Length: 351
Image 1 (cartoon, rainbow, N blue to C red):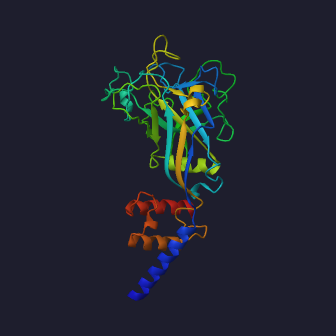
Image 2 (cartoon, helix red, strand yellow; image 1 turned 30 degrees about the horizontal axis):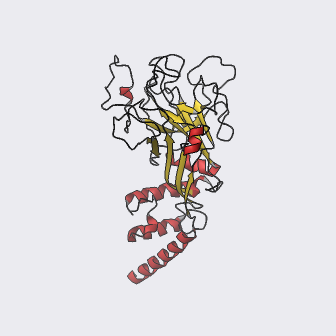
Image 3 (cartoon, rainbow, N blue to C red; image 1 turned 45 degrees about the horizontal axis):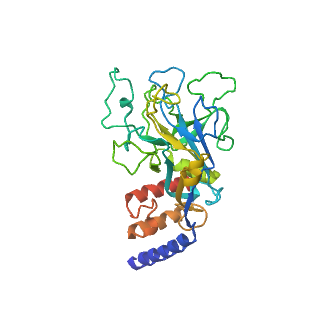
């Protein structure tokens, strides 16, 4: 009996290795220039064609404007390097990195950590908590749409308001907005998360080659490494790759003091180069995207027959028990309990 079990296990592992070789190939894709970028701000008279794009918050308790008043939307058509239309679960995403470049000089302090909601509310509020470090982070989220707009129809020149008839800024009316997603990709508009007391988890916090608290010099590159374990992040990227376009939102809650939207004085919030900016074009300062993905297979379809079923389950158990690298479903270089959970999730999605 023992010999029979071992023989079956060896045969299963051989089949598993052959199937893995026939599955989708790893793709390291990169785009140096976005397909679109947009200053999503109610008072922008030149949407989609500005040279500079900034992010900032509206003044506290200001009625009529979202908290995340100015947002930076950036999108990439991905189908030229990652084949689209394979089905969302056919994309085993390993990593996603977005970079943008700062265009203003020494205007704000570098903060590489997420700041809790309570640090943004008025200091006279009983729930206020002082921020423990200098500066405010720059954060990354997914993009959602309203009033009939979607990934296929929204462009960098689409109207800001959900209705052409709106003459004045209004909360919750922008046609595309920074959103939090659950794993079913149900969006929640986070543009007013401070006044609604909604704590949000960014998919990434921008990092820079600086010390925390440093004033940020011009031409500094900001990198966002997407946390694919964050709620909705992996499913969002998978569906975007299946469609062939990935849109993301850079957002921050820097106070709107100085410059556009902030009154008189020098801005104290970040400004970024757009793809239309001649300086960005000359020096490569446009937003860029890097994605590492295995396309063309379901992570749980281990025998490569196009579906996830009981045979794939037995193959995974055999590989997991022996520590075979093929059982490294989450791609972190180890075979452990996290891969078991990743396999179960993929199995449910692919079955």
